[in-house]
Length: 393
Image (cartoon, rainbow, N blue to C red; front, side, top):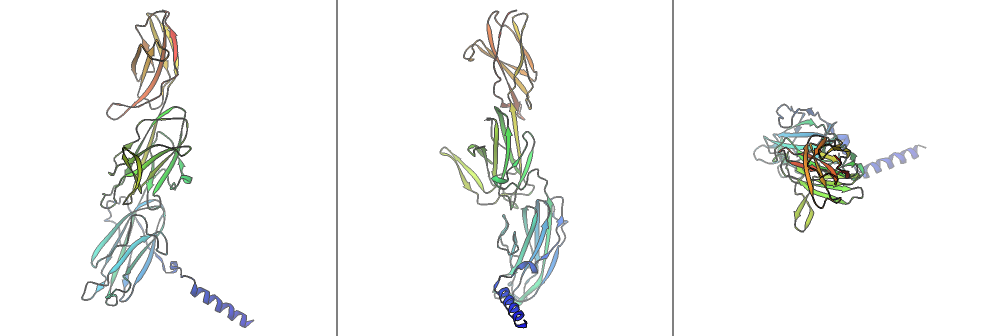
């Protein structure tokens, strides 16, 4: 029995030596300071300091955030050799895995020179992340360099309406006619949302990328936006500009009733030319809050069409949500091919047509429109169903 135990212990020990050692046993969590603005990181204190001895040196620590955040990671080092500038901390990077094989999007390994601060600005999903810092393995002056390495981590939590939507399968349903926000981050390089519209809807989609940091801290490049129908056929594509807070617009879209999908990609942009729109890979990662608003305008309907004394007709129609005005069109032609007149009714939901001809039949239809910030018509709905009236008075 004793021999059997010895064999089992020996076997377990041999297997443990063969298996890769999990670095998590040596990983120490450090504090993350919550900040109100990533623009002002002056209040972020040192999270932890480490005495770096002479010889080879590698360390891994972790930090956690409970909400999507802009994250500031700063390092200050005094590590160098006594007489020569060498043996510094040459590897400093943030990873999404504890084995430190997957750097987060937007980061790469940095060198931390002695007595200089190295800062990183990142946009991260909620989760645990790992900071690796080490001397360059095998460097000539490692056995002569030592000092202190200090880390600071601050995070500005971000409030978005849509998250965990990094794939078509996880596309979240959003409401139209209200501002929706999502995030291009280390974990969400392409975001997906889905929405529904009723039949014969006119719509426009506004998109922008918001980020309080300057583009030298977080690059701002074009982001591809693609609208698909329920069968994943492309309806429209465009780019979010390479300037923070600048809005791009899909233009007026005539949508049949049903489900649609919207994709925003931080890693791609559309090359738009006369040969067609082609997706191209971005050379830099794009980060920030994506603002999306799908403005819809349904067609209205004529509720009443009556004769008015004096060869006139009164047209009443239903109010359309989001409408800023209405146009009424009438003609003696059923197909509106001749004798067509159009009246702007403003915001009123009824209008009286005058100077009509007695005993003639008129065909009438109405459409709604919205206005842009410059007072110009922006969206124009489809025409209502046509109604006819014969002038009797």
